[in-house]
Amino acid sequence: MAKPPKDILETVEMIVERDARYNIEAYNFIMQALNYTVNKLKVRRHVSAQELLGGIKEYAKEQFGPMVRTVFEHWGVTQTEDFGNIVFNLIDSKLLGKTEQDSLEDFKDGYDFKEVFE
Image (cartoon, rainbow, N blue to C red; front, side):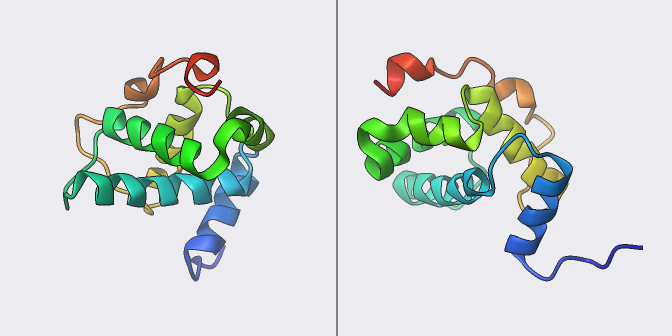
């Protein structure tokens, strides 16, 4: 039987071992973008997929400027649904929570990467 993870990094490493579609940095970015979004909204409540997608968009532009798409592609992220997959992997690993209304579908077609990040 596998021993329980000691910290967030170890948990994320275990996620990446199970689902190698996304670079570990993508998970780190999502956690940072969630924190950015919560602080920007000035709320201490559940953040919806649409709110998170908006925060991801702003935070990514601040962090990476015109290199956003290149960075995301390096991480295996090419559409907003990829953010949903990462979020739900974090939820499945108990690093994030969700409500009954939350769904992976909420992340589908959030915005067009080429349009938003060029």
